[in-house]
Amino acid sequence: MNGFFAVLGRDLAIARREGGEALLAVIFFILGTVLFPLGVGPDPQLLAAVAAGLIWVMALLATLLALDRLFQADWRDGALELMAISPESLTVIVAAKCLAHWLLTGLPMAVAAPLMALLLNLPPDGWLTLVAALLLGGPALSLIGAVCAALLVGARRGGVLMTLLALPLYIPTLIFGAGAVEAAVGGFDASAHLALLGATTLAAMALCPWAAAAALRHAME
Amino acid sequence: MADATATANPSGGFWHRLANPARFQRLAGWLTPWLAAAAVGLFAAGLYFGLYASPIDYQQKDNVRIMYVHVPAAWLAMMSYSTLAIAGFVLLVWRHPLADVAGVAAAPVGAAFTFLALVTGAIWGQPTWGTWWVWDARLTSVLILFFLFLGYIALRNAFDEPERAAKAAAILGLVGAVNLPIIKFSVDWWNTLHQPASVTRLGTPAIDPAMLRPLMLMAGAYMCLFTVLVLVRMRLELTRRRIDALQSARAGAIE
Image (tube, rainbow over all chains, first blue to last red; front, side):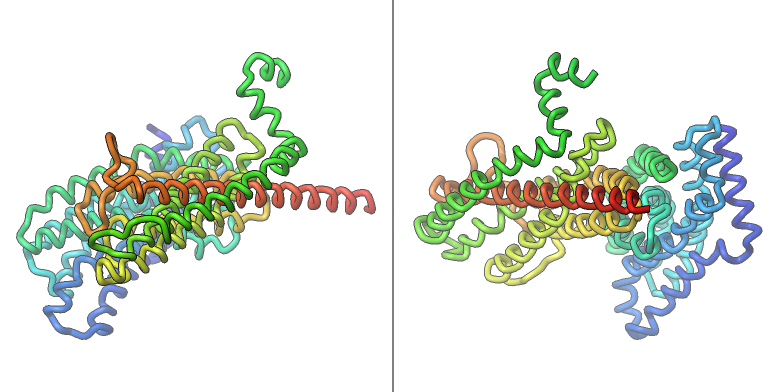
């Protein structure tokens, strides 16, 4: 587990030293969400109806934004090969990088979400569920994205392809996440949606680091 | 070592022998015309029974005939993706050289069948449901399947080294296979507009034999068509690789 915390600390330190770049995803999330009332009009009823879905879609897109760099930079400067030949299992290293990615994108977005909910006039009944759903589903987004990022290491036009690979795989998370908030706003029990969202994240935790590590090993062959 | 395995295990030996591209080319070349003829015959019979010699539905009238084009297309879409996933698995585990070729060959064909299922579904949905498209779980998951095919094809073309492209696509094929059970059971898990399975359920199918016959004939025809297209595309891909190899060998000799 030492390797896990070493990689986690390293990725967080790199993000801190890069300054604002790490916060790009959350800034994109906020600015993008703010654009919608300007685009579709400030009608509170309309905004309240679409708020949950909008916030979730923006969360997916913002997660995508930072995924390019998850392995690409380390692959280019050779750090990834050193990690691969280190005694620590590559799967554990990938898991650490996913956690770092989530701490830098998913967590800030979950923290910023109530503010977005306020701006989009989401009924207060849904706020807690929105944050809970983003906290539960966020790790799945980072993990599934990591598989796609690993597949695209060294690819031409990797950034464009990331959209095509990751977004279809993100759809279940989006459906359960937005569904939980809709249920809570409608006065229903959101626990079924949240349980499915948690199941998605658990399945992603079990499978994705392994798949991403396999993809990275093939990329470095 | 290879010969020892071949004699000890006849079925393993068959796959082993197929790894020789020339032998596969011969076998595929022999199979293709027979399967093509079978496809033509089954299409003729299936279309005759489907469009002419089968009863109309008491609710849907003649619209039910779209089923004979739509349902087999959807089955084949799932089967094509299963082919990609199995090919990926075989490539990663046994490194069988034909697995990668099969993936290359099956992906665009599968994408075409998925597209056909979506389009015929829309055409069927218009008169029966009153809408071209609903965001129902089955429709959405098949749409995802279509995007997965596109992603697979795009990923294959994103690398300069064919080895790397093959492995990346194989892993994506396996990851995307998660969607298959979601498609299959979406109509049971989410009670939405699309009807649940009426043919592939335990016990007797909930469909009249007179309608089942053309459906099964069409399914057989689609299956033969799929196999023919994949075999032809595999032979094409193997020939293309052979030409590439010969050209680079000649380029090396000139230098």
